[in-house]
Image (cartoon, rainbow, N blue to C red):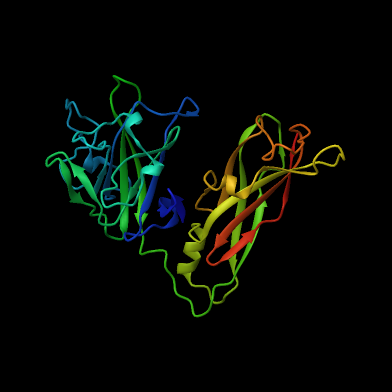
Length: 321
C-alpha cells in the first residue's frame, strides 16, 4: 500500500483489486531525463484482450488523421482527462494537470495528476464517474469491476505542434490482497543496503532491499503472493546520518530524519525501499550541527510497518568518498 495525498491507494504492482483505489503511475523519459511533455491528453482503461496489444482499441485505418490513436467509440472501462473547475472542455496542457493535493477520493476523481517532473498518476476508483463531452457532465461510471487483466493507454503530445502518440501499459485487478489465517501472522524481516561506496556529487537512489519471512506454518500461496508483491510493507521512511570521529565536529549529524523522507520514499513490488539522494547538496537538518564536509561515513536506516508491527533496519554504513 502507499499514500496519495495521505489517502491509501494500491499501486498497480501491488495486487490492486476492483474494490480498492488503484494507482497507475506513468513516467516520461526523454533524452535521458524525466521531463514533462507538452500535453497529457487522456488515459483510457480497456480490457486486455490481446496480450497487452492495443490494436482492438486503436484507429488503424490507412489514411485516417487519427491513425495510431485511441479509437474511443466504445469498450473503454474508464477515461481520465483534465476538466478544470468551472469549465466544460478538456485542457490537456501539463500546466492544467491537477496536483496530488487535489486528490480527495471523490466520486468524480478522474483527473490526471502531475506528481513531479515527468511523473504522472491516475487513480482508478470503484464506481467513480468520469466526464463525457457528449453530456458535459460526469455521467459515465467506471466499469473496470472484474478480476482480470487491463491495459491503460496514455496519449501524449511531446512538443507543441507535434502529433500525439500513445503509450500502453498493463495491470491486473485481483481478487483482493486478502488472506485468512488461524493465528496472528509472525513476520521476520531482513534488510540489505545495495550501495556501499558513493562518490561525492553523485545523485542516486539509495536502495534498501527488504525480505519478509513468515514464521507461521503452513504458509498459504495467497499469502506468499501478497508478500512477494510488497503489499504488506507500508509507511516506509529512511534516515540519513553522518558519523564524525573528530572531537571538533558533531559526532552524529542528521541529514534527513524519518519524517523528512516520508513523501519521497518509493517501495517497489519487490519490497525495495528507495530514496533519491543528491550528495552534491548535503546539509545538516539542524543548523547548529557541524558537518565537517560531505565526505565521510554515513548511516542509512529504514523504518517501515508490516501489518501491526513497526520495524527498523540495521544501521547500514555508507561511505561518501
